[in-house]
Image 1 (cartoon, rainbow, N blue to C red):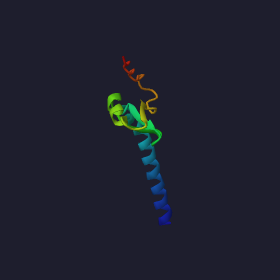
Image 2: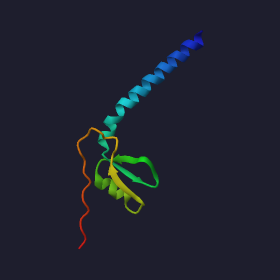
Image 3: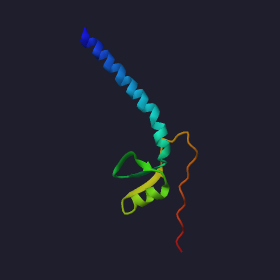
Length: 87
């Protein structure tokens, strides 16, 4: 009998933790607007960059590129700066 109560308590705590973690994710994602993407990065990539320039500096010398964080569905429209034209 005690085992069943502990199992139920554990499941309730695990479910609460999952719901809490899911609801916090959009707040964290809003700080990191750009993702490093490429062959070495699965899914959305490494979305730990607050500016496009910061992401570009990390991508330099790799087969990687920077894109807008796909987890920012309802955020303001983000733009990637145009590359300067070479003369």
